[in-house]
Length: 307
Image (cartoon, rainbow, N blue to C red; front, side, top):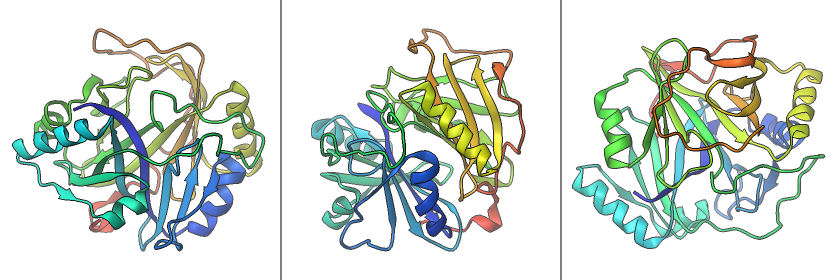
């Protein structure tokens, strides 16, 4: 499939009021206009796309959907045919759903471990419309879409890997250097970053572990780091550089209990021709100062069903 990457994420949240302050003042997100039929939800933008993150009121803080971008309409139609040939249940979004997401057309489907995904083409945008609400040089989404997401699944199966690589056409990047089973994948058309999505095996657990967002300046990392420390927000990892990426980052926890990794590329990432197998998670820094799995990763009985 000709997939560019992940373009938007949707969440259910019990803490929308907290996000309304946290998004602009900590992360530098701009509050986007909500669709006319969804004024109770909170939408954020951090580039010129209509939105990148959406928070909908819910009883449990959890990820609700992951929005993948197809390069165009023909690629979108080819993807539908590929899903159907593979026996994947596909729900065709109606006009109201497409308007709410700000896209031309979309389909919805679930992966083999139960996470809800969407595939679309033609997301709305307005040039030069992102104005940071605090000093910030902006987020680097050029060619890599919005960033990456790491999910925890109670069952890590061969069926999951087959779905991601043979059906969705993602490239397997490697399993990292951390403990346990975590595998990283990137979209076919993404040659700007190492991974778009990763799945970690957490027996009896489900949820989003972290979201990775790239910023345009090392100062953006430092200023966000200072705001996090000044507000005494909980962190997962301090500043550091992963072994497999030429990037500097740190991780802190959001109001919804998952972490955001704020990332600056020290050097341009070059696509690797081999699967990476690093001995260490990071070459410097990234001192673990909090739990690896935050409150967003829950026991199955706490998770519930997402429509």
